[in-house]
Length: 113
Length: 113
Image (cartoon, rainbow over all chains, first blue to last red; front, side, top):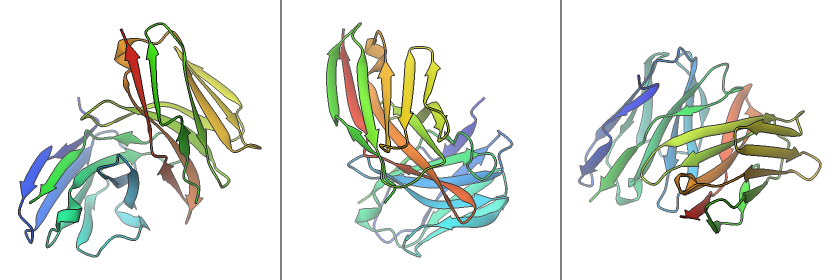
């Protein structure tokens, strides 16, 4: 069973489009995250939710909007996609607001053309 | 910044040799974690060491933490070709009551058969 699953795995889309990436965890964790990995493999946190409440919001363009319908799901919606949004987006989850191991999904490869 | 930085950035060794990777960081932390990323895959958690611990073992992995020097090392003994991957250290510090995991730039390990 996949612990943290995200869809789609690959996404190619044109500039200006709006797209969503979905994430679900079946670990019973209370905290979920979105990380972005750029072309140089640098990983940076974007958002963190604890029990559906936003607790970490890094400096991210407001075109990116996370939504957590329940504590097992954290989706990422991106409006007006730009070329620079091309990256790998990783969803992750942990228990106790991240004071324990953080488990990552397999990533969603987004290419904006 | 509390960002960890791995050293060396790339390491190539022969199967059976030991591989040592170092991580330095700048601010106080609650714990430090090491992750592995195979090409085109997500991150796999390897080991977590808390700030009050000095050394931890897990199979062929040995991690040390020196908080006075703000550094950690990951030793992989008797390396195998399957250990070829990128390795990241990540430091966990508290922001707004939650752990924020900040990743280093990663280190590429190549184990030649």
